[in-house]
Image (spheres, helix red, strand yellow):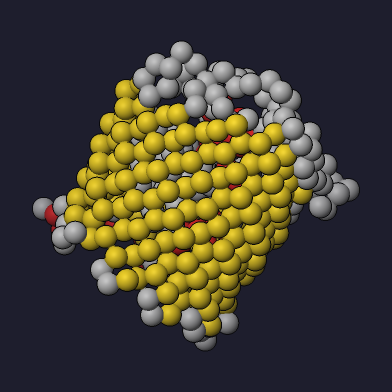
Length: 386
C-alpha cells in the first residue's frame, strides 16, 4: 500500500508542476517542509494589559517558521551543477500565506556552480541571517519573542545575486540586491559579505551588511558570533551593531522595502514600533545574545538564552531584554514536542512597547507608546519536519 502511495506521489507531483515524469526524475526534485504549531498564552497583549490564548505567537511556532518547499539539482557534467529552491511560508493556525502574502516568500532562486563556488539569483536570505543561524541557540528562532534581532538585520533580499564559496574550514557569502529604482542604482539596494570558520568544536562568523532606503539613507550592520562545543553542551554568543542614518525609513512610507524584508514588515503595532519606526536623528543599536543547549537524554534537549539590545538616538534611549527557556522532546528525527517560556522587558523610551495600539509612531518624538513594559509568553508546541 505504501509503495503504491509513493509511486502515485512521484507521478502526481510533476503533473502539478506541469513537467513530464521523466524530466522530474532526471532533475532530482525534492519536496520538503516544516510545520510548527503551538498553543500559546501571552500576557499584556493590548494596552489594557489583557492576556491572550491562541495558536501561535505572531503567526509562528517558537522553534521554526512553518513552510514547504521544492528544491532541485541537475548534474551538468564536468563538475558543474544547476538547481533551484522555491520555498513557501505558511501560517499554520489559519493556513494563510506568510511573508507579506508572497507565494514563495521564504526563498525563490536559481543557482549554478562548481567546486569554486555557487552563483544564485532571486529572493534569498541575507548574509546576516545566514551567519546568525550558526551562532544562535535556536538557529534563529521563529517567534517574535526569540527572533527580534532580525528587526535589525532583516531576513531576506529580493532581486539578489549571491556568491557562496567553501574552502576547507572557511565559507564565504557575498550578496548584492538590486534596488530596481530608475535613475538611482543606490536607492533600495543592499550589499553584504559574510564569512564562517568551522573547525573542531569551534564555529565563528563575521558579517557586514548595508541597506539603503528609497532616499539612499543607509542602515549598516556589523555582526560577530561564536559557537563552542564543550562536552555535550553547546555554548553560543553573538553581537550585532547597527547604525541607521537620520530618517532611515525601512517601510518606504508604508510599503515593503524593495530589497529587504523583516527589517520593514510588521503585522502588529508592537512590531511596527520596534522595526520600522523612523527616527529624526541617527540611530544606533547594540545587541547581544548568550545561550546554551544541552542534551539531557537521547530524546530531551534543554535550551536557554538571554538577549539584550540598547537603542540610542537623538532624544531617545531605551533597552530591551529577553530571557527564554525551552524543553524539547524528540519522538523521532522528524517529530518533536516542546515547552517554551519567554520573558520580555523594556526600559527607557521603549516603555509601553508590548501590546501597544500605536498606528504611527516616530522614535524620539516624545510621544510615549501606550502598551506595557513587560510580557510573558508560554508555548506548548508540536513540530514535524518532512
